[in-house]
Length: 107
Image 1: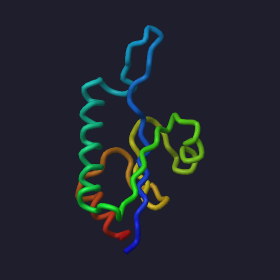
Image 2: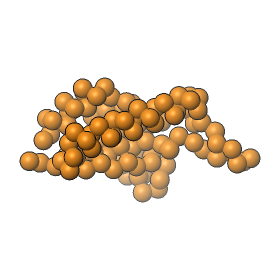
Image 3: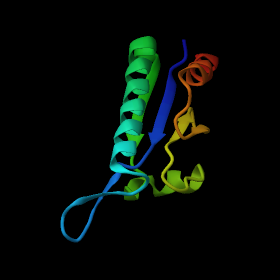
């Protein structure tokens, strides 16, 4: 069985202001927490469902090492980008069914 590479390009979600407080970069802090929880739930589900068949990496687009990926996949704004085997398949948070279908097609 083939192994699928999942790269999730997403921001950490907080910037540090000059006074040292965390400032949400998009939406409210509560919305950011909810999105992170939803993404975390999806990633846990992938690990439970597919195990070692899916190799997951999470990359912050602000990291200098992700500069090439930002251009390659057209990363804009703060929406998470889901890259499967080198192809951007989702922007934002996909429905579990859509994500499962995309993963199963590659296995």
